[in-house]
Image 1 (cartoon, rainbow, N blue to C red):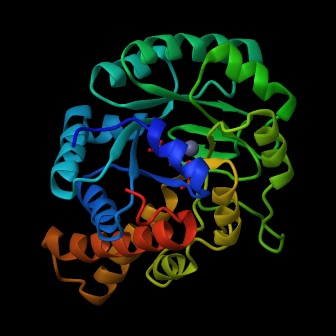
Image 2 (spheres, rainbow, N blue to C red):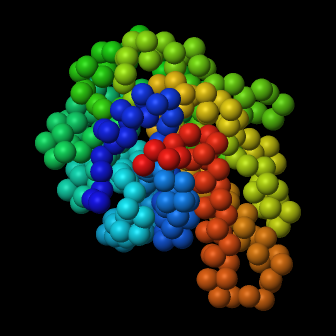
Length: 311
Ligand code: G3H
Ligand code: 13P
Ligand code: ZN
């Protein structure tokens, strides 16, 4: 099976009241952990690559790893550019075999966001590639860009119809209270996504796939593994999984998860070295890290996204 784009995946997910997991990949063990989990539960997948991941691991290495995962699993997998910040970056990924790209011009004024998104859509659609765009801005850190809480803003439902019809984008990321990274809500406050905004957006865009970024739930067992082994992450709080499940049952068809994978990998490796300070074979610490990524992803696919058995 070749790489697929997300059109059919999203149509089925919308209809079935579940979401596809979009997991960020940066190296072989992460690709293997995610895809082995998906294979076991027969789930479709989106593997996504950020600008930073591409700079770290190289475009060709990442695409070949994903091709290897398809050969090993036979699953429908889409290869997606996460947070493309320019037409040139999107074009380079489209030319280099990606089946889906995100153009994130959400920090630009509305008219400029429309203009750049439309340009990417025209090029992508000519090449059979789908485009995710974003309206509203999330707080948090991605690559070198840090968006403070004051500068973040919820999506304005009254803008979505004009945006989608003028750009021709295939899916839309919206801001309803999630944020990037491991510190999403203030300690002591009650994490609550704005389902009223999601509801209003989906009323205005019937049948249209919505995307949720910043959707890690920050499992406390991994935060604990980090903190007990020399780390310092007090107050790391994620999105409650029941709220993600609720979003998946609504118009949200793609849920982005990266920080949880990082926590699972790093927590496991920190614990390994605390227990085996003299070991130095990378396979010995990467093996349990990959196994914990696999368990985490299996849990997400079955209990949070509800996409097990849907490949
Ligand atoms: O939303 C951002 C993703 O977590 C990717 O992060 O840009 O550090 O690779 P990155
Ligand atoms: P998290 O930081 O919550 O994992 O979000 C990842 C993301 O949105 C990637 O685009
Ligand atoms: Zn994101």
